[in-house]
Length: 445
Image 1 (cartoon, rainbow, N blue to C red):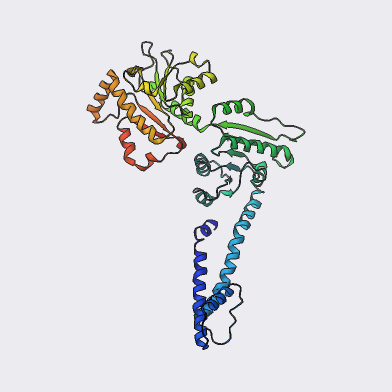
Image 2: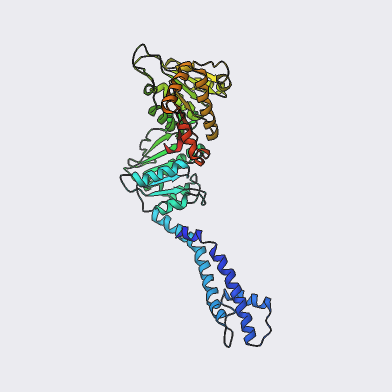
């Protein structure tokens, strides 16, 4: 009902204006019937009084329009009072309802990933989940659809302890901190811990609250994992019984990178099983967070039967920055894989410093969808021009399929979280597929 009232909120002021107009016309007719000189301002004032039932008691016969108006005006007044009280009363009812929930899900922040996760819980869960969403923006475009699916919306900031208590976090099964600000997500986890410490007797004694935090920054994520991604043991002072909180941290960029690396392995495209086979050579274009996670995931996963260290070539505009970051965080990574860093300018220059024919697979992870598409096409052209075997194999592919849809090496593009350009033009994806370039949306993974 709330959504219906919001959609029709323009009807109420329109009805008021129409009623005022009808009232003025009705009083004008009344003056004519009673041989009284009509006055516009007096009629307007009398029409206004109809809304508080102060001017409808005229003597004598009344025009039909005035009869209708003197009932319609106070009805609108009553309707206005109802509309003013409906939202707070409805919100109070929902908060009262939540107080009796147990093992429900509290989602903080309506990011794209949050919407997808909520829909997954609602559609594919083995049990029917009750979901509370805390979101400060009441005008968010997805709220109306989620309400229809039974999600209870609490407007507020999830870093406010009172808001979390209203969501009944003490008896929840999951607390998902999924805002687009990782500092806010950490604060939400901290507030949940503080609430548990303050009210241990109100929590479910033998259940564990799963606090899932979205953190993308390399440094913050590693520190959080080291100190907090473990159960907090029961404490007699604060947590009587067996109350626990399990912390889990994840990065959307890491999840996307893991999907790309696991799904598209170089041994699907080149032979890496015999000792005579060359090592796998992976090209990663970009210096985004996703690109950094791809480097780590590839170093972890890409070990093949030919027992040769995987070669990773990182092409980035600020290659010194990503090189320094990877080396400072993972100084022993070079012992697992061979990593080289090349600036974008040098890579696309003449001559190309990277042996093109050795490349098994290409990944692109940039911060813009237009930039990603531009460099994907530029990379295909560069590979074709500068690789001898690559060019010949691409020409063979063209002769066979009248396109380059099997042109080596394949290019896999991980689009950033906010994509718009590639969703406008359907033929863009078809054109890129014809060049053996495949696009993947990060939030769909």
